Every structure is written in C-alpha cells, then in structure tokens.
Image (cartoon, rainbow, N blue to C red; front, side, top):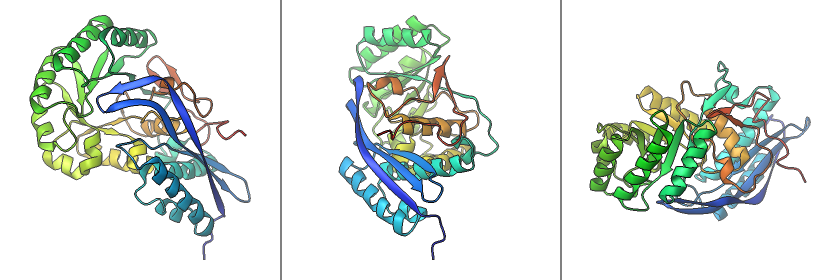
Length: 353
C-alpha cells in the first residue's frame, strides 16, 4: 500500500519567442516551446513547479515530451512520485520537468532554498555567470561584448563555426581588442570544425587568451578531442557528454571541461550526480541552460549554487527571450547571478490564470 500523500500533476504548453534568433553552427533558435509542470500535494495544498522544454538534437521531441508528461500525470495519481519519474522513461526534458517540480515541492515544504535541498551545508549568495554572444557579424559581436562588459560581465562566450576559421579568429581578435585582457573569452563551435580546422583555430585563439573552446569537433570524435588538448586552450565537451557518457570521456582523456545541461541530462538530480562524478576525476563542470523559461533557468542557478568553486556559468540567457513564464527571481549583478534564498525555487506567478 502506498502511504505517500496524494499528488496531482498538471501541465500546460507555452511558446516563448526569442528577442532575436540565436545563430550557432548547429542551427537557429527562434523560440522555445515546452510545458510548464505543476505538482500539488493534496491535504496541505503545497505546490512545486517544473519545466519541460525540449530542444531538437538534445532531448526528445515536443510530441514525445507531451506523451511522457501524460504518463507521469497518470502514474503520480495512482502510484506516487517515484513511479511518476519512472514513467517518463528516456524522455529527458519531461523527466527534468517532473523531477524539478517534485524537488521544488519538497524544498518548499522543509522550507529551504532549492540549492540547499541538494547541498545542505552550502550557503551561497552569488554564482559567476558568462554572457552568450550569437554567431553574428564582427561588428554585432563586438557591440554585444562591449555592452556585456559595461554591465559587469567578465566572461563572454561566443558562438563560432558558421564561417571560416580565419573569420572566426578575426571576430575573437576584434572582441579581445574591444574588451581588453581582463575579460575571459570562450568559444563554442557546436561540433562544426574538422580536426585540421580545430587545430588551426585553437592555436590561433590561444594567442588571444581564449580560455575554453567548447565542442570543437562533432560529438563522436573523442580521440580527436583528446588530441586537441594541451595546446594552450581547455577543451570542453557538451554534445559529447550525451553521446558517450562520463566513463568513455575519461577513458579517452577527451576533455578538460564538461558542460552540464540539466534539461538535456534529465533533471537537476542527475546533473548533480554527473557534476560530483567528473569533479572527482579532475574535470571541471560548467553549468549552462538550454535557453529555457524562468522555471528551468532558476533551477539551473540553484544547481550551480550547490557546486563548490563553480566557474562562470551559462545562466544569463533570460534576456534572450522576448517573453517569459513569469518574473525572474534571479538578479544579475556585476557578472554574477544572485541566488534566491526563499524556499524552493523561488519562482512566483508562473501559473497565474
């Protein structure tokens, strides 16, 4: 017999247009379409919120996500929370939404901020963040970088790979000249380069002080990524984590840094396990969003806050949206995200009728 308090799960769809399309080597994103999840505990009326926002190439499809959420809704009413999470199977965006709502519910009931639900001894006010600059023309990139630095950001990640290596190196050179030597620069190729292109790019950007090149080769090229290491720029894997897993990456010695996207991994709980695992293996975890709504972004901020000595994370993506699900509780100040200290996620007004 199940002695858990009865729970109800609801979900509803949303579409959030971007302020302007985000260009990268893997394609153009014009909107983020997904589902807001709400879990209510009968009796005391406690509520938790989650977000399931599929991303083509990273997660299940929109239709498969909706079908998985429907399975979870049936399971949670008849068999409880654990079976609701199990019911989403390999639908990672749906699992993220359900597990986040359950974690928000539990943390709100304790009550404690969500990051302390995952890391009880932590007490974190801020986490460092980077700004993300799309793969646009040189002038546009320089302007965006200057504005970010004026707002207090000291780390800029540029999308690269849609043009020639020489053109991307020139973009990064011009950005470096514009922001000066004190700003950290990163580049994200989304797997666009061949090995020879990657070698040329990395050797060139090393001279510009670029700290990280993310996913320079396609996800399958573990050996190639291993060969790219040790050339003066840290190599980060993003898509490669989803394709190969931690064991294979470590065995191939293919990465200095691994990008952690909770939505693509299936939830904050799984993301934290992966983060702890790679940290023990001397690989740096780098937490980012997948350009999500405020519920998922706030959850990712709490994840980052639960990680000791986390580097600048990709959390400042709310400004890429023209609309959002509700008020953003995470303030951005001087290149850092101010972590909500209220109970649970700290989001409000997202389910207002």
